[in-house]
Figure 1 (tube, helix red, strand yellow):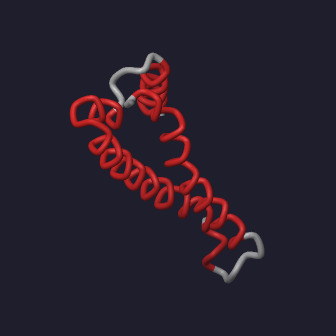
Figure 2: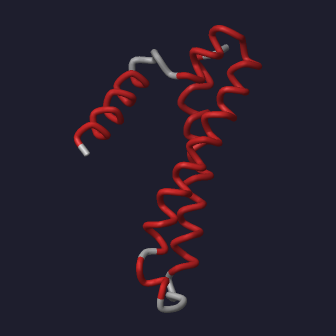
Length: 98
């Protein structure tokens, strides 16, 4: 748990300092086309990770006995959080690759 927290905080600190982010680095090396390809790749990977990890948390052990009334809402919130991430990544990095 401490290692994951360290990685997340280090990534956030580097992002705030505007350095060492894959999409931005690719954009600097290959221009705006490379930036958009890297943005699509990292966004897809992040969305897949979020959906896979939060799906098990949303379904939980209660889903074994039958449907839970809040289960569809939890799944929609999970998908909404995953879909919102690419917008946040773009909003935080688009001005760095002009």
